[in-house]
Image 1 (cartoon, rainbow, N blue to C red):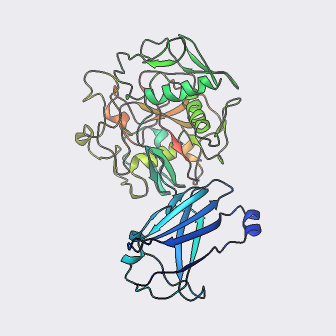
Image 2 (spheres, helix red, strand yellow; image 1 turned 30 degrees about the horizontal axis):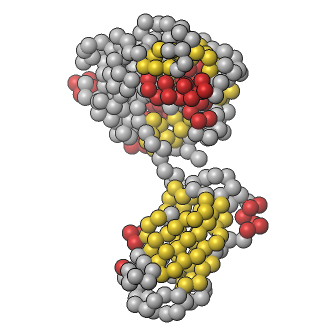
Image 3 (cartoon, rainbow, N blue to C red; image 1 turned 90 degrees about the vertical axis):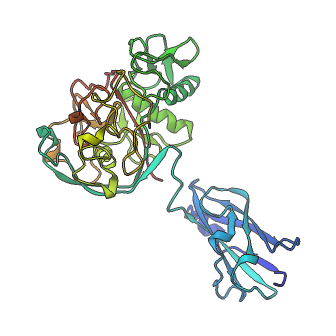
Length: 412
């Protein structure tokens, strides 16, 4: 193989791309190593005005750019190439050209470094990808209440959903950060939001609450119903779960979904939020490959439920259990049945299914109660059904030892 002499080009026009907020690749340089390894090092800078993750690919021409017929094998490329590439300088692609099946011979090769908005951004750590689709929502077995009927088709977009319910430790970490930013007020009895319409977020003086305030920070203290910081957070209100989603978004530089002045939702944001009822049930059923005859998340028969859920029949001693200690459902989601009920965004309305929109429904416009889903450690198998809707006394200001939450991340 002759030593390759490379000329480097990019295919972008700067003025056009900035006008369109498209990615811009510049200062592409490269060389073949002289150690006999036949490895080619390619360096480039990339600017993405919107800060999105990018998909970077490499093409090679041996006819002065008339065609770009040489596509390096993915297995022979490493470094800053492929999905999930961020804007920045000094990006480095390593191409093991000597292992290609192509016999390189010539004096001039040109490169094309291409950057596109990444259609498959990396899944955030601790989340699973839920591919959108259409499913039949509600009670398939005529064993629930009238509020689970009628069956109706719902179509949802893609989203990411947390693998587990949010734990005490996760709440402590985010709320302590929020306290340092002046977003919350803490005392020995309560945590409230310092901005907007003040509401109780955590009920610290309830004997079941496992989080304490030591005068300077929130710490895990444990309780009779939560022996570990990795148990799902309890005694958190609906407002607390909403605030947590906002603070986690702010912590990571993302747009917040919720206005804490009126607790409304901006559905176009890109951060974290609660799932809607429809999103929750779709994910609990297993997403696009769900099985309609699954009564519970991950299984059909009550005899198998003990493998997937902590509930009244197998929960001894009483109390929540560490998240992720039972089997996951088909999507890799844990505790969608059992452990604790989970707050959803929606107001509860027993007749809503009769008029619910078919595409990405977000629930009634008002109500008294917010919906909880999934059953809990002290509830029967009946309450752990994927169609079951829990609303009794679930005021957004309320909290208990049996309800927590998990969060959803919008896909950019």
